[in-house]
Image (cartoon, rainbow, N blue to C red; front, side, top):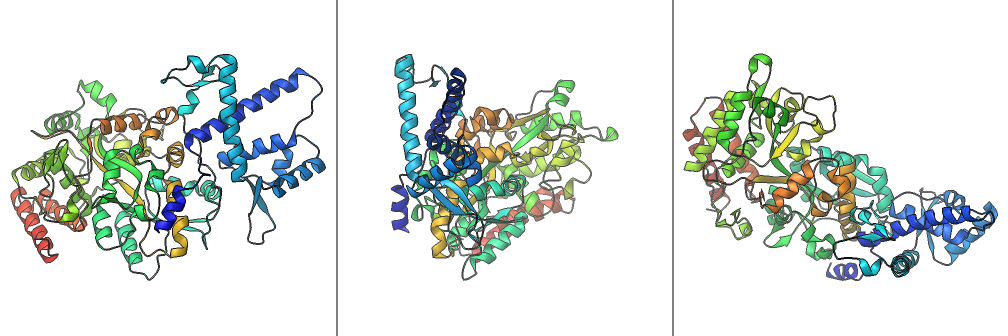
Length: 584
């Protein structure tokens, strides 16, 4: 593994996003210049080597397929001449052929590393010469971009994913296990494009959250993993690492290639256990408060920043006679309500474990050392439970069966004025012009309880490599992991409907920002240190603790037991769980 890490670090054919942008801009400039030159004189002779090379490199960087027929068509010369020139470029090692079918009779064409390196150097020279000739370079400031005397704003725009120079060699194709949410479904919809990028078939299996966990655990006990990459919910990290279900990334790839500083801090920290990364954030999706800006304006209400303000707004907007309710949230028994409870505890400044306080919240970076215990039956825990009881008054009648999707659907169709929801569910109302909430939604971190600060509990999924992956598949799996979590891939997901994003660079892309206000809002929360992962600490027992809280609190909401009794029961069950695990 360490040998492979060294090989990755020495890879000289990898193009940075800046280099790809530069090449694409120069190619566009040359195309425009050629059009102008051809219009200058009636007599002209195209250079088939340059035209075919430029066409091939541009399509390669745009992750689009090139066949011999299409490349010959781009040459600008007769078929026989272009065919000879194409053969010369293949024989000289400038163009590579990859089989498109199992028979090997059909090929796709790709630029070799030599051709890409040549275009990289050429692009830099063209820009430098343009600056020297037109006096741009000397007038450039550190904060301004340029492009041949004009605005170079495109340099801030992330380009499409780059086709790998070497296709992944994986028998049967790349196999991925994911969650069945909108973002991963977007990935599935882009299957053909990513198959072009990685150079092999992709097989993706998607499950609901509980079934995903069960399948990932079952896979870990197989002699050899069925999957090359698996998605895991952030709180599962401790369980999967402690049970040796995942490989540490710093053993299988050069972590610097992931550009860790580009990830939202909370999402990147959540991928670690005992100081080592075990996955890459595929989607960072904080739970926010969605609210109808138009309804708040009509009622003369300000957006709520505290739990008291939220209850007042919910009361003002609650009108069951007209079929409209104040707020929707996760209240279904078990996992769904358990998440709501522990996040509500966090809103009141109470972590679900006895974590040490630190600036911005609590320190969850040393959980691998053990020594923690549940903190459910506390005074702040009681405030959280009583807050949930208060929310019942302004909730839809079927609130006790609402979970992840059910809480957002009535918000989207106008039956609910506010909803707690993950950003990954925003497409339900952001991309449907016919729904009542379309274009009218504001985004806030969780309103805070008395004496606490506003936070946005981070959710989402990591992509990791199973510990029992076949050794011969490891190198290709690591390369695929880099591709699927790259800024280029993340932007592509956004362009096709995703509303999650784990990277700062993607959130600041002007084309991404035009898609939704949610990206600017989440970036601002991250900079304000409101995105936090400690509300769902990733200990091995967290899933069971969440389920316990969800069961006892459901009985509380049904009136079967009081808030105090529910907290005492949940505390006793959680303590017993940790004692049996040898943690207390």
